[in-house]
Length: 384
Image 1: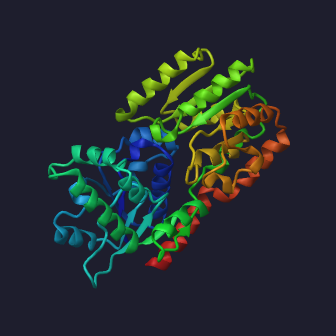
Image 2: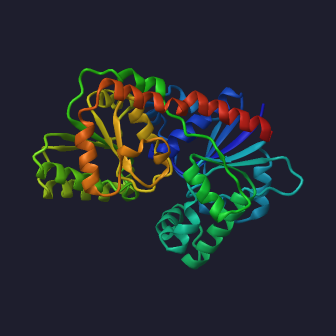
Image 3: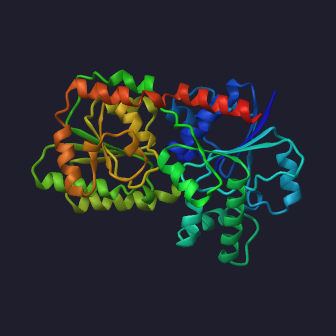
């Protein structure tokens, strides 16, 4: 039996990265691996099973090891290296934002895999936006660094080490190009994220669709959800009749952003038009998909966008920014460059036929979870 250390900051966030981490756990379990989960936050297994629609998820993991920033940055390298070498594989499924000291002692047998959704750390450190992430990490750490500058330098050094000494996977050509531009010696292998195509396909032919727009993504400023509210304001000004459901998981630290969105909705007089829904389970999300016509995605530069593919598999028409990984599977006529273009595409898409919805469904079948599992198993069998 192979032993695996899987690293992920917080599964409770419930976003696309967490869906991939959970699908990785499923895959490793199917490969009869013994898995230890390394995380900052104790998973809420009951909530995760409800959100992802997976029973007995806790049984996939042998043990949960809560760590802090000292552990991940390798304070005390000898201990870190020896711990890594207890495992056949160390896999970081949050390699876009989370540096982890994965370099083992020379001559040992551990293999290293990093799933990098997008190489955020170098850019965020350059423009100092990574400081917010570091402060959050420091709150969970017993050790206090003498300065953020030193912590930045350490985090970047560890991130570079991780990228340069592991098999790097990513989610799109968009993300692969970004990785290669920062790390010219790395040519990441693209393994598309897992989408529950079969589950969401149940409502492709729904007869209960309303003039409803869904916005799907974590309640986090990075998701740019206020753009959806701005678009809704433009639609209302045109006397266009519609409803909008903004759906996403939320963690405690982002409730101020959630309340900001509530105030914005009230300010624009959209309280009767827009509803906010948090931590929806997968069955309720399916029901909402079956009642909706359009998925509006407000996140510019999204590396992939699992939520976009999910909505398309349910027969919704996606309206997405013209920059990002989802341009690789969303037709050009459904991409917008400004709010006005988004409004026109949304209005036009409300009249989509069943055939057009079926085409959306067919176009994302290549992202099915079973294909993700097959690709990951093939990769790991080569790595081992």
